Each structure stands twice: as structure tokens, then as C-alpha cells.
Image 1 (cartoon, helix red, strand yellow):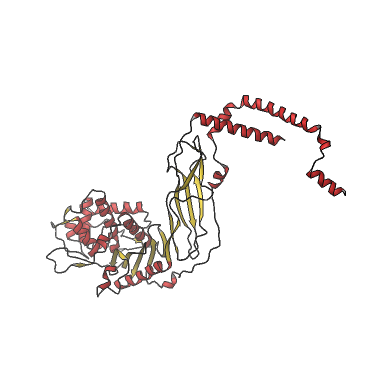
Image 2: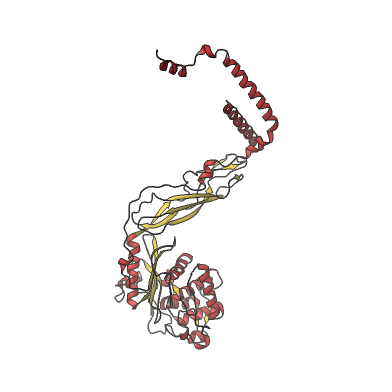
Length: 480
């Protein structure tokens, strides 16, 4: 047998004659050392041992609290460019209101006169006050001098006339009646100027970056009754983005908005020769109306038109199809018909190319963070899930496998008791679809799925002792 083979055999099967005397000595030495270490550590480590019962957050959880990602190559999804729509507008916005995603933006952050789209803020405030119970739809409003002298689109209210809030609200929403709008503003706030302050305060709260309101109607200041004109020369302006944000608040906070905005005609007074006709020709309800059926759009149920010489023709529209609602804004078209033609282009761009896709189901576990360690609990490993579903509006057919999740825990450690549903952190999902410039993100809470009840003192002590001896023997083992 050559030397290489002899060496291999010695490695696999040690020479027993060589180790006969040394092995028992080594074993006795190990036992002696272990006994000494054991006695010393028992004497000086009782309190730290019991403290071990408190437990620690696992390294895996700590590392996962920073981030976790999944990456897979996605297939590009082609959507038309904004330029290809050839929009004849000053500005335009397309927004999905649930997520707030902006799908199209053409000069959308530039402020322009909005004309009667201003009334969307008046509509929101009045509806909100009714919802809060501060007013009732049946409250009777007495028309004042300001409203009676307001010009433009109107229902010819006389000073002293009395109508309910609901009647005046419909006149505002359907017929864009300036006099009805002023009557509501004065009734709610005491004066139109006090109401204007409410409007500007709400605009700030909503995050309308460029909006400024000079009155409740959208009229130029010079067209207001002279006695009631807003001081200064700061006219009403808002960007298309501001209008979309305002519309988003309307459809979100007042989902019954269409009970007013989708009314095609309304007989304000019995003596009126004709009913007022809704200026929104795109209402789906107009599909069988001879004069408007060419403009009627499937699923469209609001919101507000606008026109002045300075503003041109404007329209904030909203439509819902297959469970997805979109908000469109076009500003500054040349004719009243053109605002609806351009709106159709914008909405078609949205409905033809995008869909709402659920990325994460409600109560879904998060990879690499399926549980957290809870100190002093009977079961120290408590499962966690995201508290709600996550959906994005994405190009149709887009690959969602590149969604990333980043977990952030509220604390490095958690201590029992914890109730089921307790928030322990957040998880942020992000996704950049092919064909879109923006990265979509949504943050939801990370919650426990079961109670973390506190363990008894005996369980905590036994757990501490077990962990102590486990660590002790592992340490001794590593010495040899």
C-alpha cells in the first residue's frame, strides 16, 4: 500500500493503539472543566439566566425589517404617448381616485381660471355640512340681495324667495345657477366672503397647490354685484391637478354625488316654462337624447362644466367601468362641444390602456416576515400579515412579479400581552410597471393574527433555565 492510501485510511479510521491511553484522560479533562465552568456560571448567572426569558427579536426579523425584494424581468407593455392623443386643450389630467394615481398630465400643474368648476368646492362644502348634521337638505333658505343680483347662468331668484337647500343645490349642480350658489354660500357662512374663506381653507387641507377662490361661483370679480365684490384683484384660479384633487374628494367622501350630478333635467318651479337642462352632455343617461347622444359616454355620471371668456370651456368629468372609476379634467377648449370631445379622448386613454389590479390580497403574509418574536408570551412566535389589500392601476397585461415589499417594524422588541390585530409595523409595496414613468407605492399596516398572551412565571423561569443550559453547553462544546 502506498503512502497516499495509508494516509487516507488514517484519516477515516484513527489508529486505536495510538489513542488508547489519551482518550479517557481527555474525556476526564473535559468533564472536569465542564463541572468547574458549570458551578461558576450557576453561581454568577442566575439573574441573567432569568432575564433570558424575556426573549429577543430574531436576527432574521431585524434584517427583514429593512427590506425584502423580489425581482423578475417583466415584459414591456406599450401604451400610447400623451402626444398621440393630440389634445386641443390648455391642460388636462387623468386620475384614478382610489389610489390618487395620475395616468395623464398635460400642463396639469399650471393654474388657470376654472369658471364654474369652482362650484365643485361649494358643492363639497355644503354636502359635507349636511352629512355632518349641521344642516338638513330640507332647511329653507331665504334669498338675499347678493344672490338676487348675481348674473350669468341663473334661475332668476328674487330677494326674499325661499327654497330648500336641496332645491338650490340641484340648481347649482345641474343648471350651474350662480344665484342659487350664492344663496347657499350666504346661508351656510353668513356672507359669501366668509364662505370664500372656508373654500380656501378646504383647498389647503386637500392639498390643492395652486387653487385660490375669490367667490363661490367662478365668476370674474368684475362680474360680481358691485356691493359684494371680493376686495383686491386676485381672481379664482386652479390647475387641472387641483380640480382632479377636488373631484377625488367629492367622489370619495360623498359617493352619492351622482344623485345630483347625474340629473339630466330639473323643473325648479312649477311655473317655469321649461326645466333646466344639465350642461354635462356626456352623461350616460343622454344616450337616447337626440341632441346629446353623440356625446354620451358609458359610465359617466358627473361632475361639472365651466365657461367664461377668460377660462374658455372646461370640464371635470368622472366615469366608472368594470369597477374602475376615473376622473378627467380638461381646461381651455375653444368651444363647449370641444370640451366633451377632448374629455372622451382622455377617458378612452384610461379605460383602453389601464386596469385596476390587486397586487396583494387582504390579510396576506409577507415573505421573510411571517412572524415576530414577542417577549414573555406563551407562544413567542406570533404570525403577522398586512391589514388590507393593495391594488394599483397599471397598464393592461403588465407583469406584476417585480413588486417589492419593504417592512419597517415599530420596535426592535415586543412584549406580551398583545391583542390580535395589534399593529407591529408597516409594509410598503412598490412597483414600477413597464410603460409608466412613475413608481407606484402603497404602505399598509403589519398586524398580528392572534393574541400574544403573557406566560406564567413558572413557564418563564423554565424557559430561561432551558435557554441558559442550551447556551452553556453550546459554549462548552465550542471550546473543544
